[in-house]
Image (cartoon, rainbow, N blue to C red):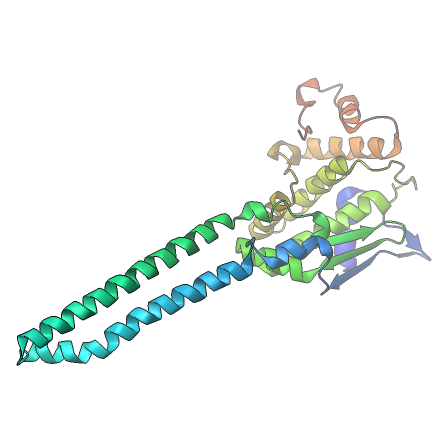
Length: 284
């Protein structure tokens, strides 16, 4: 944890608060399920019990077909080897079987149609966007990050990605988020603004993406899926050259200190000497 914290401090150019020379940031992972994650944990179904009953009915109707067919298989096998002694008896047998199968087949088809309709009503749009607080929270006054492992695992299951890689990516994101607000510049100046979640999460994603980009492709893929899930925006590739990194850092420091200047204005000021790149940090 300490090595990751130091890497994140170095990447953002800020320092976590210290007490007696030791960083006082806390990081914990919890098995609780916050209220914000209840829809995610329930899954993709608007009415899970109704869908479950649909599968149960389909299983019963399928079983009823098997119940009709299985006892008749030995008789049919017998007649395939040696023709029946009484054709009329065989004719009645086949007609009766056909009538029963037609009735059961109609019921089976209807049960399948109903279940397909229920499944089509249950899509990802009922879950996304997921509140960011479903995965973790930051406390800035007493610098603390808490991750919620069960929702993270459930999301990984839904989108079929590695839960451990996802946890690592989310961990980095929340540490950058905490550092952006609770951290101090190298000269000791601290964050002086309030609110502005859109800019805060945008800048956090910029730094997280840069950091993960140097780690592995899998981490980046997991991170992209997760950011998309809670409605965040991924930064453009143009931000990852050395010059853009320097300008991002300068604009971020300026923005953290200037209460009455928007992010767009801060970025424009930094780019005054290079106007052709002034729109690279737009997040609309």
